[in-house]
Image (cartoon, rainbow over all chains, first blue to last red; front, side, top):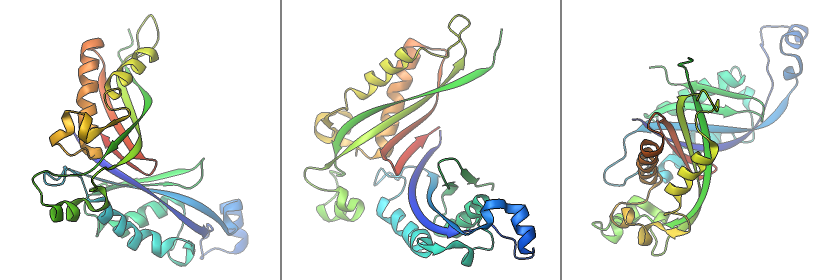
Length: 128
Length: 140
């Protein structure tokens, strides 16, 4: 049996898909409408896995989890141009980049899911 | 005969009150461990229980389980918690702290018992308990 706890946070970010090594015409042809700058309300689902702490009956203290997410995820990214922070902002690349950011402060992290729109969902699952 | 299995998932909502309090802790320890969840009267949630049941597809009905049966199981396990104060009204949580983790473990055991009795060939594959839209526990 394994137990997981998931917290979802919202990040309002703007981005576009772009490879800086390519010309505008090549980017346009490669990424289509995603080359134009636009924004999303990303729903980021952060999942940790582990054992219930016998003292608190919690997998992890909610306030501690929320503080880590606020400091490492929401405050640095919310309302920002994500292309200024990450080298690529495809949903897949963001899921991995956010996982890498959070793995240090959240050693029990096993999955980052990103609902980019109602139609698009991306996920990175710990592969260690 | 097709021996492959499929999964069906169904949800049920229930509303309960709870608070986090470890009787053996001092007030200071309780506040340090549980923060704003440690209050005299508690607070409420609209919980959502979601269960994923796995099994072979029945030859005659072409279903894993009749949704009415699944709803009946969900009702049986959530009814004792619905519109109750978990700490004061539910025996299981008089001592055990009704954290989302512990409620999920409790419900998992109850669902397994119901499935074992009514549909022994089916397996509870996964259980999710949503405390809010943005916080949930999953057991697999």
